[in-house]
Length: 180
Image (tube, rainbow, N blue to C red):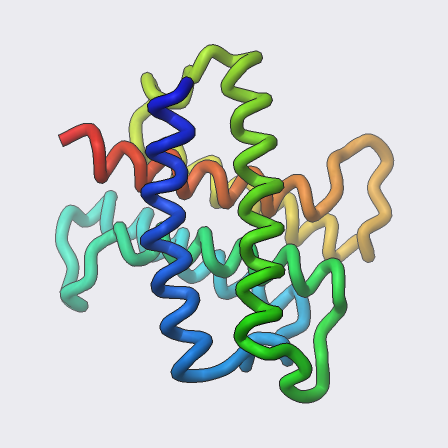
């Protein structure tokens, strides 16, 4: 599992670098997004990945890798928005946003390591397309829970779904990066 931890960190370094650069360019403009809007943004990215997987080509010359990075970064944003609520204006410095990002990604990594222990890294034997489908399923679950105003009877909360989406996207990025 040492390789997985190091691979996770390597992939997150790429995701965090892009997140940091976008904070420089735009600030934390995403703070105005309501959680449902963040869910929809992740849906757009996951749906594009699936479309590219099915069609086998792209007219916009960006592959699936940037979309998985977007899912990781928007997943962290979603967790921040769930915890803090949305803002009417920019209320977070780039430094605060990066600190929050690091905290949410650390939570995702901890969950991933725990699940890897229990599942013996079964994700390494899965098809990358299955991660896309699982992310889309988690998105549909999240939308349903949002429609229920978070009131579930037996299901995990929205935050657990976002953490799983982040980890599935990281699994895909690890496989794309290291399984060459």
